[in-house]
Length: 205
Image: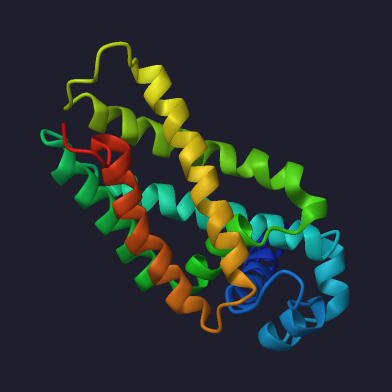
């Protein structure tokens, strides 16, 4: 086996173990020691390939986001109806979390309980997935007749602002909620309602 191939295999072993560690714990409770124990990996080997916990965590977050985008794109569908398009998008997203619980934990921890000292790096990693979500939202808007004076740019900015407020609401709930899995289900269920309100409002004209 060539040295390059051996190095890649070693990094994959470390990453796989880190994904399980960060996928079952928060950033604060996860540790390099546990990653070593999970994967039966000498600690020196980890530090030979990575600078430490922060680099591994950021790589796990990026891997999660990349896999999520790839899954959503693999199930790309034509959006002919706004409600149906939104329903399908959220269904695929929720199914991804159900089938990949470790990714679900990493995703929601990075959004709802991000380590403060890594805020800048996480925002950069999150940029691609935020842009993809924005593109999907714009496709849904194409199926609607917007109110007079409302542009797609304004609607997108409102969507982004409302999403941040919604996540902020759930950030407060993470400390008081006992079951993180139930919190994820609650987040996803309410997300569909929030999107519906953003598109159609709360008052009947």
